[in-house]
Amino acid sequence: MRLGLAENPERPSSLLMENTFIPQLLDGTECGEYLALDLGGTNFRVLYVVLKDGKFVEENVDYFEVPRELRLGPGEDLFDFLAQCLSEFVQKRKLCGRNFKLGFTFSFPMTQKSLDVGILVSWTKSFNCSGVVGQDAVSMLNKAIHKRDNLNIDVNAILNDTTGTLVMGSYLDHRCALGIIMGTGSNGAYIEKVERIEKWLGKHPEKEMLVDIEWGAFGDNGVLDFIRTQWDNAVDEQSLLVHSYTFEKYYGGKYMGDLFREVLLTLAKEGCLGKGGVGKLATHGSITTTTVSTIEKESMEGEQATARKALEEAELEWEEEDLEVLKYVAGLVSYRGALLVSLLVGVLLQRMERPHCTVAIDGSLYRHHPRIRPLMEHLIAKFAPGHPFDLRQAHDGSGKGAALVAAIADRLHKNGATTTTTTTTTTTND
Ligand code: GLC
Image 1 (cartoon, helix red, strand yellow):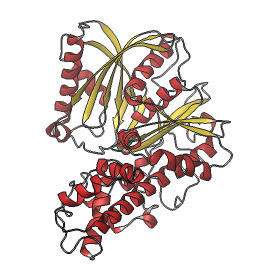
Image 2 (cartoon, protein in one colour; image 1 turned 135 degrees about the vertical axis):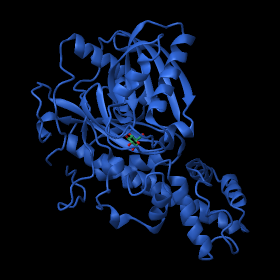
Image 3 (cartoon, helix red, strand yellow; image 1 turned 135 degrees about the horizontal axis):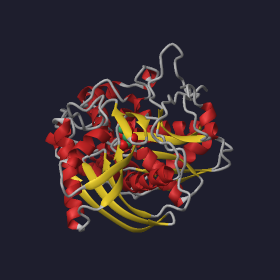
Image 4 (tube, rainbow, N blue to C red; image 1 turned 180 degrees about the horizontal axis):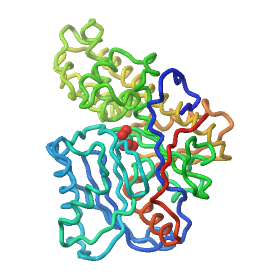
């Protein structure tokens, strides 16, 4: 796909541009009870919602932490754990044995064969379970669910968190056509015209389709090497899955703290930070993205307690002016992240050519960083002049969006629409 960005024509695109098999958003007729699972980070969520005329009338959610050994162990154990959490959830709410449709947010790159088949392409972020790449995550989940007598559940949709965020965004504002996650990882999904999808093999009458870009992998073919720094190389080398997800590692919440730390480490080595020595700055993971966000927040408020604490915890010998160095570097890594995302949003707004586009965003980086939103508002307007937009936070879009997609799938199924047979490739041609 050529998004109008600096893709090298000699190198194939690294973007997955995957069909989500969601051709329609909510139409306001959705009614019923649905379950949803949301897996993508260290927190896993189970949701129960009741919809009436396309609106939430009841919502319940439970959070479960996914232990490290499950994130890195055999895939079967991970899916058994998901089913166990689901079982505890329905038991607690006295919903055992009742039949529900379930939407499954699985926030990893996958190739969808239908709305309820998602083949994992590769793991990202902090997951690397064996035996799942190349497999259908829905089948694995179903297998785990069927081992439990108290569950009578049909997984009728699998989706990415960006897709859930887009659908949740459209629930909040019908002009929403782009969903973005800026959390541990980062990605976007948008509404594409079917006529612009190259190799569309379907016979559906649909005019539009939600497309999951998987922009975290942008640059994996080398096209973004021109902005790659020595600190990006260091962050990549220390990551769980090296040499992948170039774009995401430039600013994702899982990486920004380390990027900041790597820059400080170089400055300390070169005598521009502290009074000699590097203290604990060489320790991977010792500074988190939350620290960067908080330093930024405090800078705006004329405070510097967190910058002070970071220097103390790094066990550096430091002086007052070093606080300014930390604030400056926090500002730089944050600005670069906002700039990169805004570029993609700008290109997508131009591509979609809508009279107005609401961009739904969720994720911890966006929620907690005080400057990302204002920076993005400013930069997107610059990159896509004449394309009005709003940024709207879609809180828990990935979880609630999954329940909404389960309801849309249910409606499509009842109306006889096919959500399961067509094979398509969503590479687009301009
Ligand atoms: C990673 C995943 C992608 C997800 C994003 C945000 O990039 O590969 O599927 O949308 O993180 O969670």
